[in-house]
Amino acid sequence: MERAVGWFVMLATALLVFGFGYYMYQTAKSKGWFNTKARFFTFLNTAAGLKPQDPVELMGFQVGRITRIDTMPPREFDYNIYLEFEVDAPYYGYMWTEGSRAKVAPADFLGKRSVELTKGTGGHAAYISFMLRAAGIAEAKDLYLSDTNWRFAEDLFRPGTTQALARAFRPLTNVDVAAELGRTQINILNLSQTRRGLTGIWNEKENRYDPVTDGSKYWLHADESPALTQRLEDLVNQVQSALPNILKLTNQLSLVLSNSANLTSNLNFVAVDARPAVSNLALITAQWNRPGAFGEWLLPTNLNQKLDATLTSANTNLDLLAANLDRALDNLAGITSNLNAQVQANTNMLSSISKAVIDTDNLVQGLKHHWLLRSAFKHKATNAPPEKPAQPLLPPKERGEQR
Image 1 (cartoon, rainbow, N blue to C red):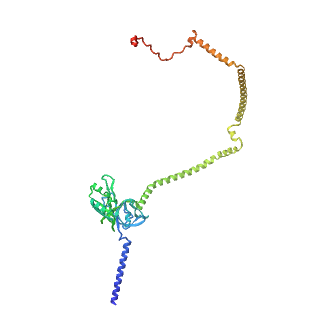
Image 2: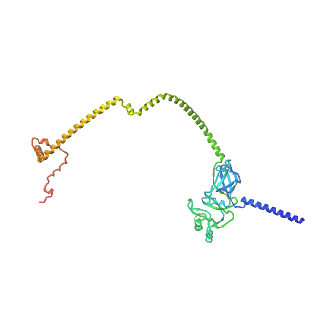
């Protein structure tokens, strides 16, 4: 009986230990204690709304947690708060040197804030799990000849420029450029050999992957939004500064309303005074419905009669003028018809007229040459070009004549 009780106690103890161990395993697994974690850090202006163990999210998923929040040293004037967090596998693979940021923004209306990571868009991965080592130039050549999976683990630039001679993850085909830069060793990695944990972290200052150590952390730059309490305080300050202007505006509105009331009261008296004028205007407009009402205002009766008499007289004179003009045109037509008849009857008239004109011209030309009338037809002197000077007489020898 005692032996059975002993076996029962031992079995119950074993079951209890197994159950407790299984519970601890599941708890650790759910909390990610067995997952590979990558450590990151950033700097903030304030720690308001943040505390350790707060979740870190990526694309809406919880991928890590805040591990440390602390103030910077008193002599540090660029940053105020140091924030450290870790990201579980495989989500740290989304963190790259380009595009990855730590956004700190309000999470609710009670002042709490959250850390949201953004996916990388280019550059190099912040952490790698490939085999990483340093090798000499000759050794790197031999390794690449034996296994083409070896790659550069750093970026090589021409001195003083941004021209890249080699890039990380590129084949070691141009490994000689490292020797040209005066390097004796370079960092290389093998894409076919992966490790369970993290092996390399990108060094932004040296542009290369360094081996991961216990203190390795990657600096992820932050985009920080002010806390909700700070925003509310700024809003209250703006309202407080604008309040005097609002009160001044209300006073002005009150003055405008009082002036409007006075204006309406004065309009009542104006309407009473304008009532006779409105009545007269209504009477005047009532007369417009009969013919000639408005015309009689513009042209009185006596002026209208004088205008009719003037127009009648002008019409009579115009008729007489038209009749006289008609008679004058008839006389002119008779004269031209008589002239045409005479020309048709006497065919020698035109030749006689032409002979008379020619004889008249001969008479005038004869008068021009008469000694008594010649001076009346003299021409005025003009600026005629000078005549050529006469050539002087020269002896025969000078003229070149031959005897």
